[in-house]
Every structure is written in structure tokens, then in C-alpha cells.
Image 1 (spheres, rainbow, N blue to C red):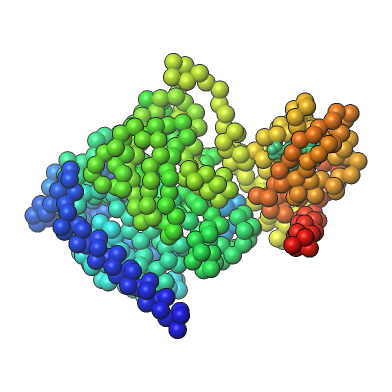
Image 2: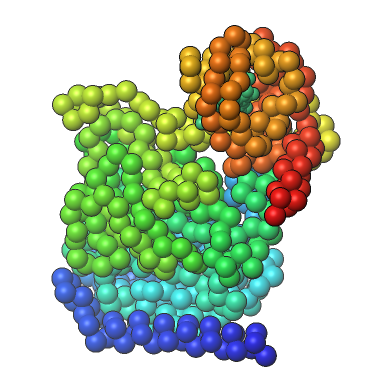
Length: 496
Ligand SMILES: [Cu+2]
């Protein structure tokens, strides 16, 4: 009974949402550029170029409205969501976010939605750029192995989210069913050197952040709005390392930034850059000199800036735990000569990047795969542990393990560590404070518990530490970390 009421309620809320956005478009035209029908399409029909993120289709370069055919296929597929973690995404066009669609204001769009025969679920599409009930949702409900077709006129310019609206809507969106459609103004957008497509989404997996293996969707976490991952372009690391966005100094960059949700609002920020222009909410008004722009769930913005100083620019959701503990972190790498008059120099990648400063975490994936198949070697653990140590432990204990005199004790040739190597498991899980003497020097400081690391990660890091810098050697197993964590949990329970 309660469930029925809830369902009814959510259905009516959705319906109100659609009606409201429909009447708002009809009644209140945007202040800068009006909605406009530029008459019937001219010339032969054009097939839209669709791109997968972070790519954006080229400008339409058209002076007249056309008939544009869009063919979009829904594909349900397993893809990595983090190193060694996979998730069964539901996608528009095989990627998360879905294919980028670019048309011109006044175009007549003939939309074909295909649902791949190998799929298990029915799907549809609600395009926020469509004026009409459900944004196309009602006309596009498509069973696996079928195709739907509907036509709309792109009346309003702007950048618009599209998403699946098949029940349970939240689940389809949480699985990655969203993307962006740009409706260019009749004169087109101003020329820039680079256009990129970035879209945030929150994800809910049964396992914890970075817990390895295939992770199913967790409906409870989704309803409670407690995401396991908050990501740009559907995977941790989708825009870092070799896949970072690229630009040179003194170039104009335009980002189309969407937020698919399903739940969170994004505080989109690029560390070290100021947005010269933002078309906030994807609308026609331009805000200038912006540090952080708010992107609602089911909304988008067009962000522009000029690159000046070379280096790594980190894009985050400035609700900052999401960036550093849930994955909402992307990088734009700007190359070119220094301009010391603007910034003195010195790269500080690892300060912000943590373990993401490592271009590639393949060793972690290998260790996970070998652990699963029972062939994990000490060498695998050392390689994975090295990648993980850099950016987590190295922040304090230094990449060389030397520590900092009087502040952070050394791990290299540490008599304290080597006297009882397994004690280190407890130190990483619980943290450490109070007096410790390492190699004759006293430290009286605090090491916080490294709770963000999972059992495999801690085991690999400690195995690396024990086998490096002249330490005693040996191996720490994931099960030992797990047992230590359970001791902590049992103690906490007993205390309450
Ligand atoms: Cu769907």
C-alpha cells in the first residue's frame, strides 16, 4: 500500500515536471534569444554526426533550417567504472554520457531510437530540447529489438540534457542513460580552439568505492541519495592520465558540461582557471568571471575560458569529498611556454591529484585480476602497491619513504616498522597517535586512519613498503587487513 502511494507520487511528480517545462517554454521566451520557427526545412535531409564523449560534433555551419536525421541506439553493456571494477551500464550510443547531438535552431529533427536486440529492458528518451509532452518520451517507448521514430522542431537554442524516462526512471538514469543535445543559435557559436563534452553523474553500487569485481546497482543507496561514485564521463579516470583533455597555452576552450544526476547537483569548478564566460543552466544569458558554476541535475552549462599558464587543471565537483573520495575528478593538460608574469611556475600535481597523479593504474587492475583467479604474486602486490603508495602515503611519508624530520617518520629502514611488520596493518586501518620512536627520533603526531583504502589496496601498499628501501620483506594479505578491520568494528560495537 505504502509502495503504491510512493509510486503514484513519483509518477505524478514526473508528470508535473514535464507539464511545467512545456508551458514554461511556451509562455516565457528566453530574454536574449527568442524561441523561433524558421519555417520548413530546406535541402536534402542530413544525417547528424554523433560523437562519444569527450568529443563534440563539428559546428553545423548552416545558414538555413534543415531536416536532420538522428539515429541513436540504446546498448546495455558492462564497462569499467573504476580500476578493476565493472558495472552494467545502460547507454545511449554505447557510452556514458550518451552520444552528443548537435543541431541548429529551426531544424526539423527526425529521431530514430533503436533498442539493441541483445538488451533486456525497454527504454525511451526525453529530450529537454523538445517542445512536446514528455520531451519525446511518450512517442519513443521501445522494446528490445525494436525502433521508434518521432519528429520535432528545435525551437529554442541552448544546450539540453536528454535522458531515458522509462520506469523506474531513477534506475535508468542512474545506469548512465543521459547525454547532451546542443541546439546552435542561427548564427552558430563563436569559434574556439577546442570543444569538449563532460557530464557528471552519480552511481550507486552494492560494494564500496573501488571494491573490485562486477558491482550491481543498489536501489536503496539511490533512494537515500548516497552515491558510491560521483563521476565525470561514467568512469573514474575517464579524463585523467593519457585520457586527460588537452589544450595549448593561449587557446580558447569551450566545455559543454552536463549533469545527468540522478540525484546530485554539481558545483563545477576547474582548479586554477577562471571561467571567462558561462552560459549557466545552458540558457542564453552569459555570466562572466565565474569561479564555480552550479549545474542542476538534468541541467547543463556552456563554459569558456582562455588557457594561459601551462600545467594540469583539475576539474572537480567542488563538493570536494566527491572529487577525492568518489571519483569526480577530471584533468585538462595545458602545454606551452610558461608565463611567469601570470604564475611563477612549479607543478604541484600530486598535491591535488593523490593517486590519480599516476598516469596509469594498470598494475592495480592486474593485481585484482590475479587475486580473483588465485594467482596473485608478491611481485603483483608490490607493483600495485607502488602505484597506490604514491599519492596516498607519499603525501606525508614522501615518495622515497624518507619521511620529514620531526614531522613524519620514515618508512625506509624504519626500525619501528621492521620490528613488527604486521603491526603496520593496524596503523593504516586505525591510524596512529601518541609518542613513537623511529630510528632514534621521537615523533608525537597524528596519522589519520586510511579509511578510504580497501583491504586489497592496504595489503598491496604494505607489501610494497616492506619490500622496498631495504625493509625486511614479507607479504601482507588482503584477509589480514579484513581481520584487522573486523577487530576494530567489534571493539567499536562493544564500546556502545
Ligand atoms: Cu532506459
